[in-house]
Length: 403
Image 1 (spheres, one colour):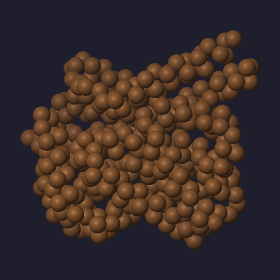
Image 2 (image 1 turned 30 degrees about the vertical axis):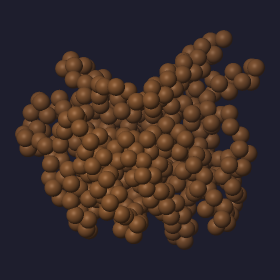
Image 3 (image 1 turned 120 degrees about the vertical axis):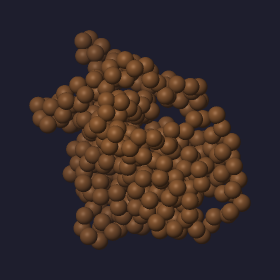
Image 4 (image 1 turned 45 degrees about the vertical axis):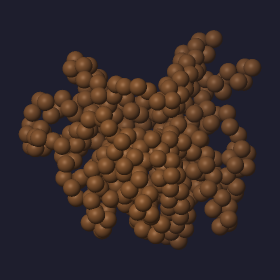
């Protein structure tokens, strides 16, 4: 019993430490994302993505890059673009770019996994878009796309659209109202992801402390071995999405989990497949079905699965050929790291805690809450899991050390 309580304490400490390492990166990324979303008008992107061609796909990728990083917000924006007449392929390019090519994701990956994974995320994200483009061109049925668009239009009924903007970015960036919108958007970003982040970091701490290496070696065939055969590598790229599918964790919350997997010997390809799987998790499938119907939802998921498995394997062998594969054996165990030191993280966290506090006060004083509305079943499940996570953390960090 005493050993379990010590592990509980260690797991909670690891979770808090992981979040402490990453908070400034989250905050910096969301400040940048909020500024872009407020100051960059989105009306033109809808008019530029109607036809499927190199220009439209490039614009979809670019607008996704400068847009929201939250998977669920990206799904909503993608639906709005698709309903307004954007082609299926440019819309999917926007969705993939807005969840894989964003700045804050790269920062968090660099903190937990290293520069090779950052390169893999961005280069792989572009390859994902190209392969999805090819696969959709090869398999798309016009009737299915038309049915999905009609379904999306009916699903959007009653929802107001804020895509058109009357003021230019110059007027916004020099006005108090513009920065008020930045503060509001910053809070909205956190409101959309705090449950995913809470559960993701808590699970990462628990897995890093309680789950033995042998489990990962049996789940991810070939994990921990010096060399991995092609079939073992392929098996790991298949297990990564399967493991991610049943989680409720989005693109930001799964990074500490990916770091745990890598520390346990899972290959570069397996870890990248897990990271890329944020758009094939069950909550995303459910939302896609609400937007476009189940046929299109499963079609998109299968296309994404084929693409991410191909890209993860291609990136692995490409990095291996160039001698750039990271060595998991040299990575430090998550539970053994020193998290709370006087270094750059401390000072950056102090700055962004202050800025976050100011933005929250500013947002609250205006009482603007665009996120109000009925919660879905997935939201309620995440909320309950988040509450359980906080209870677990409070006991582990505050109660057990005092006993």
